[in-house]
Structures are given as structure tokens and as C-alpha cells.
Length: 165
Image (cartoon, rainbow, N blue to C red; front, top):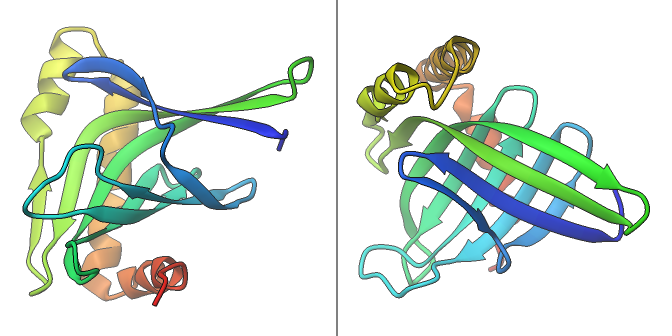
């Protein structure tokens, strides 16, 4: 990885591409990245998070925390990460493309799948390809199986190792 790292989040609904200037990269290798962040605008429900990006599985698993640091919930985005390097400027750009499907795990263990309608709408409008939608559905299905079998705890442990205090 080059010295200068630029992070961006690309959404299809709403359509936007924003720099993640306040995210802190805690770990990076060829298959994973861990970041920490604080909300940009104060919220009453949560304040910060630690996110584990698995580039190969197309997941972002986030421990979302309340202001006191306690768990609000686990939020899992299905996404594709695009990494490019510019050797001339010594810059690595990491674009996290949201593929719309999200999975939320509440502290009580209940699981919610969100935004399947947005994924269908994005496909219908040509915002994502059939390949994108297929990738998102397979990634979400695999993640749901891992949650059901209890293997998700392994990912939670990884994220928890980056918590302070």
C-alpha cells in the first residue's frame, strides 16, 4: 500500500460518492481492512463504529456503538471494494461500492435483512448490473448462513480486538 490512502463510499440509492476523510485505518492487508469512525453529525442513537471489510467475501461488518461505547447493533453491508494505486503520486484509492443489501444483528440476536427492494430497484434502473445483484445475493446468503451457524462470532472477535477500553 502506498503512503497516501484515500477512502470513498459509493452509493447507488441515493447516488453519491463521498470521501471518508475522518475514517481511521487500523489495519490493512490484501484481503481485509479495519477502520474506526465517528458520526459526522451528532445522533441520539449511536456515535461511532469499527468496521471490518472483507474484500473477498464482499462484506463490511460494523460494530455500531452508542455514545458510552456500548453496543448499539452489528450492521453488515454487502459491498464491493475497488482498490487502485497511483505510483506517481504514491496514492492508494479504496472505493467501497455499496451493493445495497444490508443485514443487521441486534444485541438480542435478532437478524434483519434490509434494502432488498433497493437492490431490485437499482437493477431495474440499470444502476447495478445483473452480475452486481448476483454477487450481492450470494454474499448476503453466505453471511446469513454464517450468522445462523454461530460462525459470525469469529468476525465479531476480530472487530472487538480493535476496540479501545
